Amino acid sequence: MLESIFTAFPSLTTTAKAIEVFDAFRKGRKGDVRSLIEELKENSRLCFHVVNEGIDHKTVISKFSTSEFDRLNKAGFNFNVLKSQKIQTIPGIEKSDLASWPGKKTAALVENIYDKIKDLKSLHEFKPEGIGNRRLLINIHKRILLLLRHAQG
Image (cartoon, rainbow, N blue to C red; front, side, top):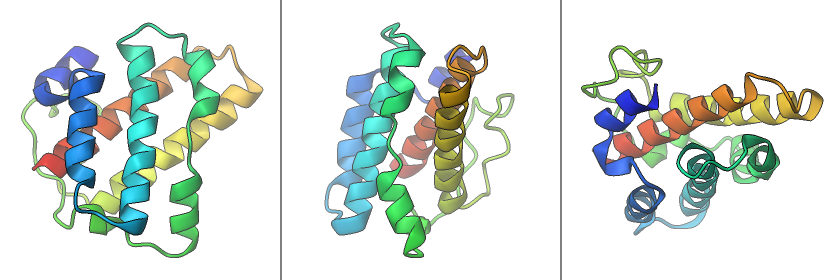
């Protein structure tokens, strides 16, 4: 499951490594782009708490934020400014649930990440003990890591 993703993204296997990549991604950016990257970084940190540190996902879900994304989306922000190139093929994801992403635009991935966060928050609100909630959180985590890998490269 996550092992194959970590094999594909070796520089992103720990919170500290991912935060370094987020900081590099954010460096030199200003305004809205910087705010969105910071929000993604904090959401990623929450995912790492569950995946790497064993924190119960039920305590983390309500802490996910979509406020910057929502503000920018409402204003018609072009999420492709995060990275103008399309997502490249990455060895190791071809047999994962990320296999369909190469060739798609950055905006599609960002919008998908936030759609999944909103789905998870809504599902958790009505079914806090839902068995699929942790799985959905892990899927969000994988997509954020894919976005980071795409930004690196």
